Length: 466
Image 1 (cartoon, helix red, strand yellow):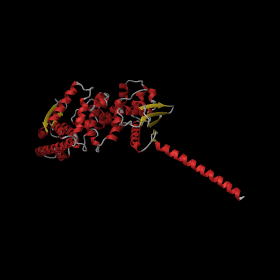
Image 2 (cartoon, rainbow, N blue to C red):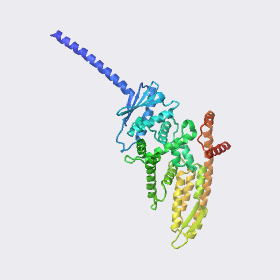
Image 3 (cartoon, helix red, strand yellow):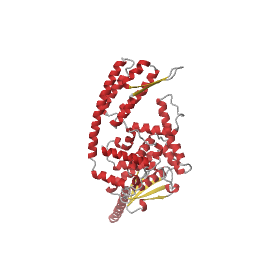
Image 4 (cartoon, rainbow, N blue to C red):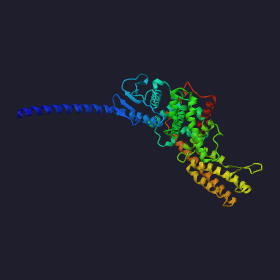
């Protein structure tokens, strides 16, 4: 009996050991598979043929791309989605990227070095295009279309900025757009965004185009909601191939911008009539106002040179008023002689309307001004508010004092800017400047019009003189 019990006990122990061994192997296999495969919150599967510490940055890159693309496509109108699977292989993928589709899955195959490949812009652009279509409910190979380049470039630029930029402050993310905005030389929005550029062929001009695309994608996301998403709608309509590019752009992007422009101006101006201005002008006005608001502010103030130009325009006060059955009246005076208008018309409706407009303009200047100028500007604003409470002579004396102090502040601010700019220039390695010059000179395909080339030559000459 004891021998029989011992026999069964030994058999049980052997079976237990074998089962434990098999469970351990299975667990090890599962652990290995889970280590090489990652699921994102949006359902995208990211897989590596062999994952190690060198792939960690690539994993973060793909996860960030998936999160960003999914956020742009946050729409209740998308009812059909395919699972997106990204596979990073050790073996070479022909052309750097390949798409394979099944009934429910779209697989994107990439080389392990796709982020550093010579044609990375083309490879990553195709990956973004495929992910956008897949998450919008289309199979990329079936529809066989390329989405508008500005969408691809906007997402690509954000990825490059995130993983290759050394910028610390967000105010430096759009230096080119900010320069154009404060110089009040922004290009036509629609023409610029629908005229794609290439990083290899167009050099520094592409960098500005990329800034524009990144900026617009971020702002369109602000205008989007689950029930009204212009980016998702544009992708959906483009993939359906029933309408022209212009029709799709007008019914999605232009519609959303015009809607926001009308809503904003109706809030601040009770007399605003949305039918007066055509949609094209509204889109451009929205673009100009938005860049000024986002890129020039208290954290990223306007350069002193451009501030002087804007303040010079502010100084001119224009009185326009027309009483019933009387001819219209108009008078223009510098801020230092504003008392002439006040003494003639007193605090009537025309004077109040003029002052309200100037306060809006002055508030914008204060918001965008350099730190040293704020105190003098606030002094001017406070003084202008006293016209119906204090002698106009005293007010003009105070304004003139503030103007003199403002000029001193701006001179000091300009010297500080010149000093900082000198330090910035000396910190740029000469080899880097020389390399950029060589790259620009060897470009055979320049997409510059004659007028643009002349303008760039003038800018270069002025820079060399400075």
